[in-house]
Length: 337
Image 1 (spheres, rainbow, N blue to C red):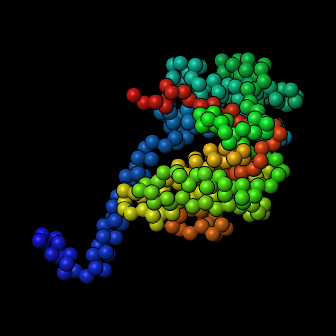
Image 2 (cartoon, one colour; image 1 turned 30 degrees about the horizontal axis):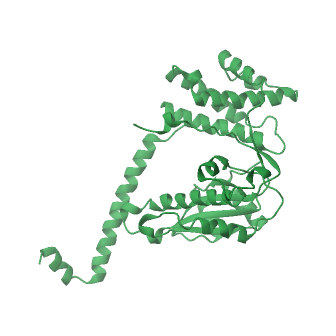
């Protein structure tokens, strides 16, 4: 028998467990510091100089402009802060990417800003504040793009009729984030069907940490989304689904982030299941500040042992609705050799 084994036989079980927990806590602190350093060095800060970081920031601000095109009532003048940031980032990117005007991020920006200009000009709204932000070449591209209507994606209720039977490859192409819904209520039975379809989602060692909460009370949905802060400009959805992951199913330091992986997988299964069930849905960020984390937990009864994964706003499709274009990168950007 080894010395280590002999000591374990002598020491009380409670003392051994305390030591194991102490070692785990030390390891978690080390991992936390390492992950903090990695993120702090890599994330897209406003003053960043890396091309991928700047492109990511630009996509974020252009998306703010683009979302306005899907509102029921367009809000003229909205998004001036996003425009200023887009102008700054595009100017900085042009200095690090010699082929910047062929960059898909730049092209998407030009399409969105062209539509922004087109709508304002047609409504006799002043666009001087916008043209003053960009250089002559970029303004020329924006003016050129404004001569054509923005290639919005328009969904129809009729196009969703066979969602339950189409091949998966087609279903993935049909799924879009939809933020405006019909007035028809969404029942718990409707949502439970989608949850049931998602139960085969893989998880580490089949421990299944995903937890789902369904909310249909409009007042509660309104309060929750007010704290969430990313659904402004749209009517409240008929239903709100909260996806969390229960940390109690995990076993050691190496699994401390696994809840986000397994919970994210389940949430994606839910989005496809909702689409297959003919329901419109939109994933919503739940990366809260400490204050909003506590507010949300108190409001919705979420214990500390669960981590937030995302909200999913859910409703029935309208007869017709426009959605954000949200252009995707091609394989050349995603597939690493």
